[in-house]
Image (tube, rainbow, N blue to C red; front, side, top):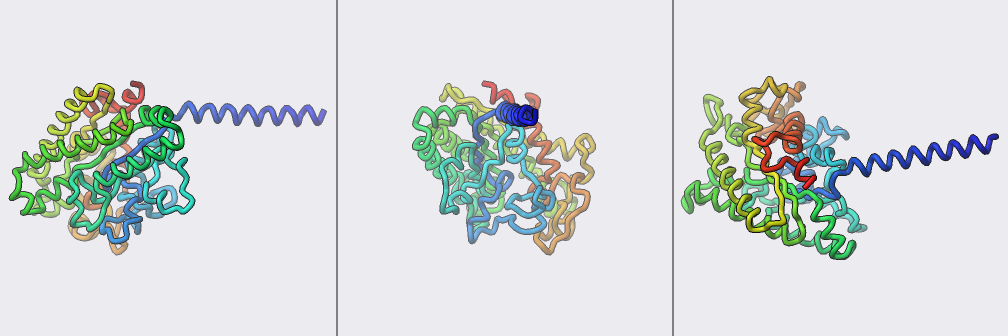
Length: 365
């Protein structure tokens, strides 16, 4: 009798593991997510760059992260990369440099994706000069090429191609290039704003082609947000209004980006993409805050001085208790609350925010 009960108990345990395992597999919508970009999606790469000024590995960053500790994310909790990973049933893609730093690095670390995103990075190699050090997009794609070779060695060419063709490749970059242009008399003397944003789109196209040549087929590309409305830009205006010139050229770049993606699709028939209109979503937060649960759209949550934008979110700064009410965490970056809504729209957004497909539809292709 006792043995029958014991056998039944083991059977129940086995079935529960089987069912939970089945659900986990069912919940995983893609094999891997590979992330390229800047501080909006950096999950800790810059922690490993010794002389970089663009770091978030100190309080009060991470105050709402599950560990309650700073991780290198430029926000109070999770960023958009974290939320997208959750939606596809995967852990957040780890920072590439954290894997390099481990003496017992295993190629298996790359099987569910990796993040190359780096605070201060731009499409152009010289964008990070004021931050001294970041992983430029060129360097990020160089690293990805190395990962490709690792995957081929581990899975074989066809196995690696199968994984990469079904994975998501997220690219969130461009804001630092636009800030860099308007902050540099040298850049402004070499090209008009229109020439500059057109060259940004062209340079990004070349990097997307490099990623594609390794086996990537599904791209999630975010446009630049309404960066003229960041606390850092409002702080420069006595009226605390958005910097309309910066916003204007963000819109112009996004138009060039959308056009470039259409061209790329016509040139490379086997790619699919989802373009996310970050600008429109962020502007909606600012113009209709109550619809999204926000009450503060101008000031940063963490910092010091007017709009908490005179001093960045350093350990000497103060931070707000009502973080869910704020669009911006610091001078430039969204709060976790804003990041969550951004990720919701990237994944399931309507066609006027994500086109020609949202990410859920992109996965199904």
